[in-house]
Each structure stands twice: as structure tokens, then as C-alpha cells.
Image (cartoon, rainbow, N blue to C red; front, side, top):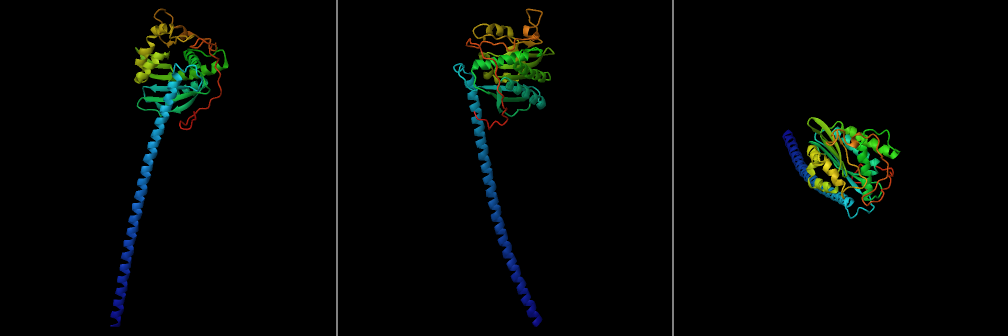
Length: 321
């Protein structure tokens, strides 16, 4: 009997222990569910916060883009051409082939040419793949009028047309010509592509099995056509036929009231003049009066190129305008 009572008391103790363990297990599961619910709530809150941050980022990106586009419109406005402010030049690189290494090299050389002309990178957009397309926006280091901007673009145009840079007339011109030579060197590896710096375009394509490179400075009317048909900047052959193959008529138009005073026609490298057995004058010129003072659109002498030391802005979101 004594053994039986001890065994019974032991069984009761074990039953109590099992009951307590079961209760503790239920409490643990309840708290675990509470923790899981809290974690799910925190995860949902983080997702909602991330969505809001992404929405704010998109809004800031769109606002920044609209701001840049407004600055571009103001920079190119006829009514503000005599006003001095830090104007914006859109620049772009298009390659028909998806060759990011070559695209980055060409974009870097174009940015360097802009720096030598007195501009700095204000904003870079991400490159688009498939073909290769990248747009940047360059801002003048100091306040300038529109004729002064055009004066610098004419210097870049002549530098891109030159075959030799060993006889340029000043150190500043040499810097610009050297930067332009790097752009042309990068274009040597391109079959079909377009570069742009403001209204100055370089188009490389193949016609009848032969590579053709044209340096084209577009008029205001032609720039409006490009803006109305942005696909032109992604079709080198069509761009060439639209603006470069009709260069004779374009030059005759420039000789009238739409021509910038002192401006020389651009050269088409590798394309002969139909009226002469010789190629166009500036396709064979070895020495160009690169530093000579020219007249602007208003008929006044444009100032010589003065270059403060620019600082490149690689972070698009931190630049103060």
C-alpha cells in the first residue's frame, strides 16, 4: 500500500508538471504569434515608407528634370539672348550598337570638350541600353550671353573640323583643339552614332560602304525640328541625310539673315564638293585662325574665350544653381 501511494503521488506530480508545461507552451506560442504580428506590421510599415520615399524620389527627379528643361529653354530664348546668366547646354551621345565602354569614352571626351569651353557637368542621366544613349546637361561656369555661348560653340566646331592641331595660335585654343581631337579619336571606332553639344552635332554613319563623319552646326529652325522629332538623334543615317547631305542649301541659307556673323560653314569629312574636284576648304585646312575675335549675332565683337577652372559635378542631386 505504501508503494502504491508513493506511485500515485508521483503520477499526480508528473500530471501537474505536464499541465504546467502545456500551459507554458501555449503562452509561448501566444507570445510568438504576437511577435510575428508585430514583425509583419513593422515590415508593412517599412514597405509603405519605402514606397513613399520612392514616390518622393520620383517627384524630385521629375521636378529636377523640369527645372533643367526650363533652364534650357531660357538659355536658348531669343528674348533673353543678351542677358547674362549661367546658361545650360544639353549634350548627348548615341551609338547604334550597345557598346557601353565606347559610349562612356565618347561621353567623357565630350564632357572634357565642354570643360575646355568653360562649362561643367550639372546633371548626368543614366545611360539607356539596347543601343547606347546618354544625356548630360552642362552649365556655364560663369554668366554669359547667348552670343558668347555661340562663340564658344563655333570654336568647338572649328576644332572638330581641323585635321592638325600643331599650329593653333594660343594655349586656350590648343586645349580646345586637343579635347576635340579626343572626341574625333573616340568617333573613329564608331560606325553609326551621333554626338551633340548644344546646337553642335557630330554624326558618323556609313554610306555606300564608306564611313562618313559630318560636323553640323544647326540653326534655330533646325534645332526646333530636332526637338519636334527627337528620334532623329537616334537615327544617324536619317540625321545625316536631313542636315548634312543638303549642306549646300543650308550654307546658302546661312549667308542670308539667319547666318551668324563671321561663321564659317562646317566640313563634311570624306565628302567631296560637287562643284569642285577639291574637298571643302575646311576639310583640308591645317591652320585656322582659331583665336581670332568674331562678331556675335548682334553685330558686336564677341569677347575672347576666358576659362576659369571648372569643377565637374558628378552627383546630380547636390548641385546648387
